[in-house]
Image (tube, rainbow, N blue to C red; front, side, top):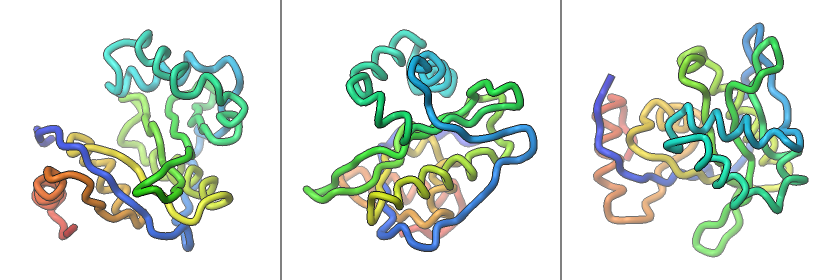
Amino acid sequence: MHTVPYIPLTMIRKDLDNLPSFSCPDGFALRYFRPGEQHHWARIEHLADEFPDKGQALYHFEEEFGNHLESMTERCFFLVNARDEPIGTATAWYGELNGEAYGRVHWVAIEPEYQGRKLAKPLLSAVLARLSRDHQRALLDTQTTSYRAVNLYLNFGFEPYPVRDSCREGWELMEQVLKRKIL
């Protein structure tokens, strides 16, 4: 495992044609968020180290999505285990870059004990398929510390999009860590 500095990165997929498609392995399924399941989203995001505690994650959910719960029921996915317990999440949201509309891959997270089981591929497949219904292209924000996710996004056709001076340094670092040509 690499220890890398945190550098924010932005990636785009110029179109939503020819999307990769992956099914969930046995014992797992995808379903949409249901009203009242904010606590699942907050727990997953906290366990994936996106927030220092579940309370802050829940607060963020309410701030960002609280007025959009109806949209969440058709845009926020939960990856669930055989007991229908949410263990991962990702949202097919709305984005903008340089004044142009994009679909946004947003808040992708899987509980640590389920990471490394090839579950991110079906989750990302579902989000991109959902985005393709209403959007022509997609963007996402990530960071160098999530280099395994960066590798997945590259494999799904996303490309670096420099939005700040530190991006070049971040992408050069990703080339070293992932041992692949990116720029």
